[in-house]
Length: 150
Image (cartoon, rainbow, N blue to C red; front, top):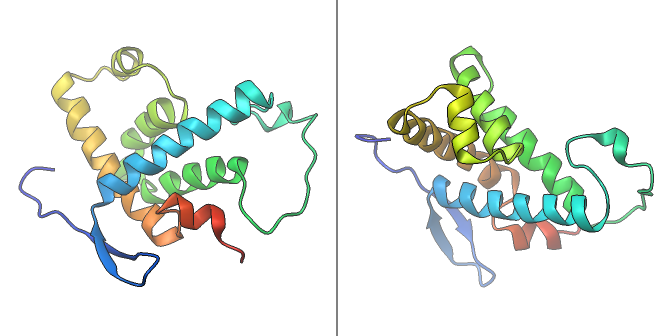
């Protein structure tokens, strides 16, 4: 958002050094992993990420490391947590439609009745607000999320 200082979070690298990460970068990376995970789950494994009733062939196997379906769920929960409350209800609709539902830009913008300028403002607010959640939940960087053994 214009006029607002960029807030950064600190993450540790593999060698213990601290680096600053903008929430928008964390969101963009996590959304990219989300889109890839959705594609793998839906096209290659036949599991719908949005309809849990379509998981008839999927067998749960205990594992210590997170899996793609957990990433999809965690990304959705992070967005829900960041956009919780009546002031963010319209942004939540956009988040669910465009970022989770992967609706094409033109369709989503038309459905919501947004101008291009409003679209940019809303998506920047979403990326900033939702970008803080993956940092706090240990989802960023994704490599750390998928290699954790907790």
